[in-house]
Length: 211
Length: 135
Image (cartoon, rainbow over all chains, first blue to last red; front, side, top):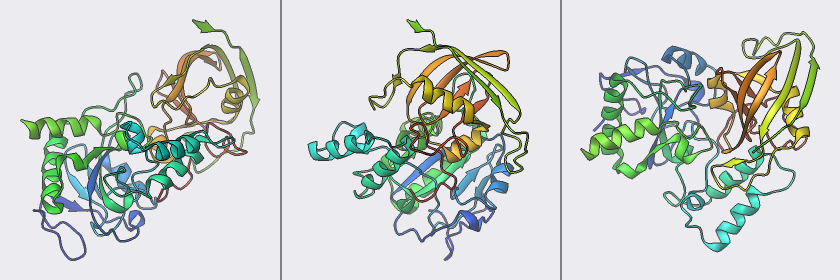
């Protein structure tokens, strides 16, 4: 179990605090999931610099050498998820009524794709987790430094050092918040981002734990 | 089967420098020619997307800016509907993938995206968010 102080900061020696108040928002009521991200950068420092002023970010950042930074309190929401997929639509399990509403939102005339996705996200947030995918108010985010291949449009694999740190951190978060393996998500699976974002990290973790 | 689409968009953009994004934007004269585009949409999420028309693509090419991977990651959404083709830009030929989120990936790694100068007036291929927020 992660040692966490009253302010929501991990006190374990494996985690370095790099507080970025700009990415902290409302209090987080309950942590139901963890979302794995990739930075689309080659190093952690550029991300830590950006988080001095940006409003979006994640609670944790795993650097290129495997160093784990905590940049937001675990008691605060971070804006890291973005525009959600409809979970039931993805699983082909929506009720007829719900499916109809979602299709209407997705095919709204004279609306940009961004507007459609915001409407779908708002609709999904009317549901409880895990009926929908996790969002900012009920999940923690972990960014892992890594860029996307221009040719293949997929993110590079996390290094051995990054994987070691990620596995340890996810294990600790699962224990601390009584989560299960199904509560760990790749960003590209739940939101309209590059489909490969976080997938290699999640797959590596699940293979490790299944073995 | 490939449909030939010829679009020539000559841009004489002002030479002013945007100090906030000077590294990711090109200013000055730009010349595009989309020489070839697939006539089928790859639709990964089953959204039933129709083929982007020439007018909309021309608007994109006229007003999109070059952005970094990180900016795309933070400020844009991916739709999963895309078309592929070949583009000539300032005389250089590149293949491209155009995602309907207003993101064009060139084979040399550069990314054109529909941001502040391109979005608006109900333009369909816009997912840009200046300040990505709670939802």
